[in-house]
Length: 236
Image (cartoon, rainbow, N blue to C red):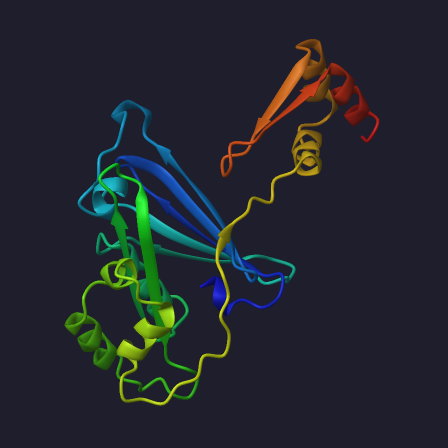
């Protein structure tokens, strides 16, 4: 979805519910930068591999999509989680909220230690004016193929996967873009977050001699001592 954005735009997906996880947030921008975090329900402790998203977020879970397209206000769409699979629920959002015929296929492979070995995704959408495109054709082709993660783990490139999916059709790869983790947190952003607390709260933190700002995405910790907090007061 980030690949569909224009320069300096961002998209965030937020999954929420009352299952094993309270919240999961993933974010991407037009440059291929991605980051994310998950907040578990404390009393559940360690989470083993769940059967599906319903185990993580319960049948009453919600998917919220927030887009920053550099306008005055953010775009936000909300749909219930209905299938228990991330790809199916994303397709449901795109078809219902954005009214764009879409097929989403996601897959991943975990190693014996539970760490991610490979992950892959495919998004096929009908272009404006071609809404009658039969996406079932591609559903059937994907059903005839090994899972995406298996293809990638076996050394197939994304371009080779596309050749399988669009077999017999003419297509052109317009751009190849790498994806990579990068967090946008910073000391300056942490300062802005503290400034929003107001003078009285900052003065209270000065009495405590320290304020700590933790980034949920990368776990970077920004520690403001009393002197740094005094400097913040000068900016109010």
